[in-house]
Length: 441
Image (cartoon, rainbow, N blue to C red):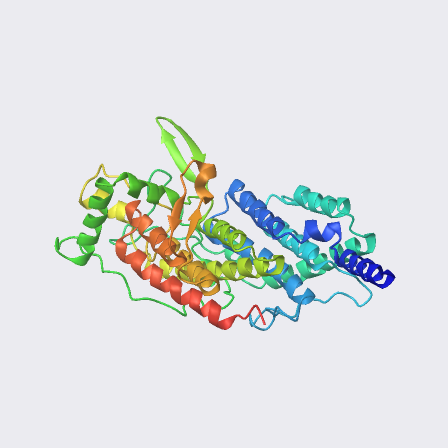
């Protein structure tokens, strides 16, 4: 009997000794990482970051977080150093330092997110909240300090590396020259804004050998004299589609609009409305999927990071092509040659048409997520509800990417060819990311 009671007591002791400390329950919750990514997404939205620069914010912050995870769990996760050929080895914690790698991962994300956004210190209050959360949950002081210090070391290393990507150089690069040349992009109403990030194709990619690695065929040549030619017919197609939109098609166009800064003009007054950028939308989708799959903290970080890399390289490749072609927007052609009073359903963004950026990056992200969860992963995307737009459901990520691409035709801002080509272009980029980068061992 005493032996039996001893066994019970021993078993209870083992169970209690295996119980996670409270700080691990709190700080290792993958939902906390999703909330942290969303916080950066909100800051990006509030401060009018264009889609391409937003993708830079996401990629460096996520890579910093992932490199911490890879350092803490080398048996299951591979460092990206060397896999991304220009990424140097990430610092390791000193031997006499204890680190909570999940907590350090969150902080590294925020430290880098703070450095690549503005105004300076945008995430300071959120970081203070994370630190207080760890202390309130009982994280030991030595573990707390070691985690903060290690997160700082990794963040500084990633920021030093980021400075070699030509971003600062492009800040002082020459502006796009507007020319009244047939078939060439010119600013469109109501903003008539200067061309956005004309030198983004000069940014150093992560996986692509260069921005020009994957280049599709040229779009149809300008020709408005031949009313049966490809160029004129593609413009007429956009006009006819927009003129007969169904309620469902308008919903699709609104859902994927993702205009980071829309200028609304009412009489003599004007005001701006903001939404997530296309990349921010796919960061939200990544959060939806990782939550649905109940992934652990470390795997959640890895999926966000791989998706962010695909988005980043997708924008670089697409922007190189845009300013290589300098292709005219449908709005310009339709209002000049078909109907002067015509307007697109959504606002035309300020950069050349070919190819569709949303098509490229959506397809790139979809390939990454498909590689992780399969081609029949059905989900409902409620990302746009905070902007008053109802959710949409999709049978797969690839179906969502095609929906995003075609929404640009429904919105009247792209020719269909640019969306079909962009979808294929993005898929090739996403597949290259999956092929070249190994996250899990």
